[in-house]
Image (cartoon, rainbow, N blue to C red):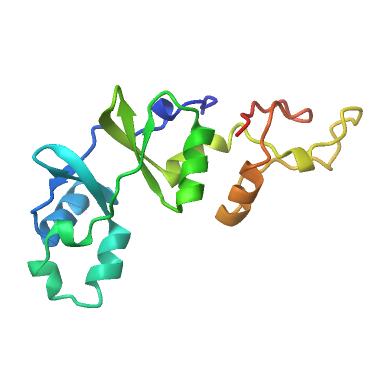
Length: 178
């Protein structure tokens, strides 16, 4: 996988949408049909929220019969959180971390064009990040004291990602500064 620098390289499009007045059951059917975990919720063609598998599980599973009656607008998450298509992925990571969310809608010239997920961001960053505290001293011979952050868990990833800067002296991985 090539080095990823900006959100545009990771986003999924086209953005799949559902109307605010659609039933939750219809939203679930659409997610299953498309093999996705979220839908952008629109009202008269304008994005107003997002509905995710997690929203449905948390709000519908305790009351299964409500899935047939409930509307998307009753369980969608608002407000929508966006990021510009040309922003660096470290900016997207910072937003999902600070807001404790898993998906960002991606804009281009203030129009929503796609979505990027936390999983996309983690996949995109694993090829170019190393943490400064794990870097060997500049005069070392690339010894075993260096540890790239590939494959770390989510919590550790977010703790470590805040320390990213420049290029790793041990493995020459390209990294961005938050």
